[in-house]
Length: 498
Figure 1 (cartoon, rainbow, N blue to C red):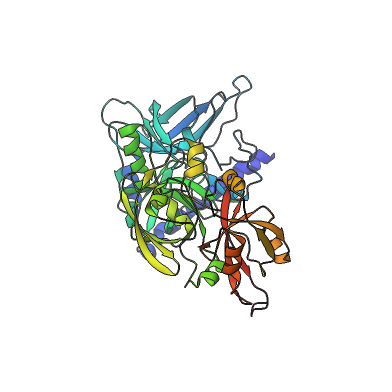
Figure 2: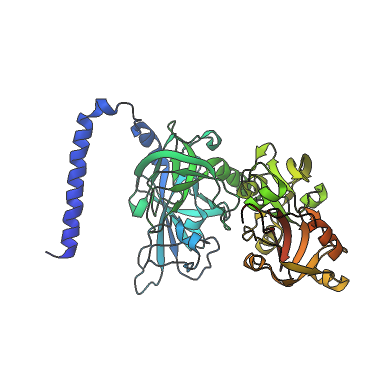
């Protein structure tokens, strides 16, 4: 008996056990009466869930697959093997079908769902991006050609349109903002190409920010619903049979489901749909700041109660933040009344704010809380411009040092001009003498902009700002390295922690 036959028998044996288990489950129904019954939700909504097939000739360039990975050995793998985070967060690409030698093409299978009877379909951008043709198969086995009306890679939402005679079944849209951890949810989709597969679980967390460079503007719904490759773009339902999310990513080091899955909130997805229909693209709000997580060093140096908030490390010239008076060294505590627990919380809130809207930003400056009103600007649609000026989470500052161990020198006007600094702004590190300062990554040529949230523009100002530091104190520096700025805490040796 060959290996393939053994596998087939194994599958049959598992199926027999599953059937037997089903009989036992029926007999034991009274003991399980407290669990929800999803049959009515499935019967009502399955006809509105579709199977999406995207065909690629390889001639078009895909623009929306950052951080994604296919199964090992499958066509379409993105080479991000050097990125540990990309290795762990995987989008649910459809199950690629191996191309024939004559064709040298590939087909990717995913999921989607009809949101209106006139044929608008939601799916993920990464399912259809760059495809030459996209088709949709309905539950009644009709296969229809789909037009990609528009998509947004950063939210990973694509809007398709199909034309069919008569009205089409459509899902009911829920409110993802009302979701709470512990609620039951279920998914319908096409994992590994198996149509209309239903799986269930609970909401594990809401407002989950993954810290992704590719999707910094999405706060995901985290669930333990078993979903796999091919579930991409499929709907996530609540117990009322309403769509509350679009299945998008899993956390896995194998490429398969490991108990942690992420869905895009339906409120975010429907906002994308509205903008695509209204103007053909998606706009996002922008403050014009770079932020980083509040570190333990900052808590100690600034005498904060805890490490919540987003520390501002850079403010773009001419930005909404600069016009409102936000400065490097400020700690953003809340945005429009919503607390900022970590720096990753800020970009989604700002990004979803319509440009031109006034937002109240609560900041901590010099140990005092104050609220500033900011007129939110529009993020540039050009990717390079957006990368240069958009709100984002700065990579965390390097580890705190146990000594200052550095010397500084004044900057001349030509150097300041080359660095884009104003007159009297910053001092240059001329030498690193302390071993822990060196381990903290400080280098000659780095520019110190602030000491303990106070601007320094001369050697004298630097010395005045650091002269009162006692053993055990942490001195917080805002340091510019190249074109990036970040906070570094250096602890004076001889304290209790030594």
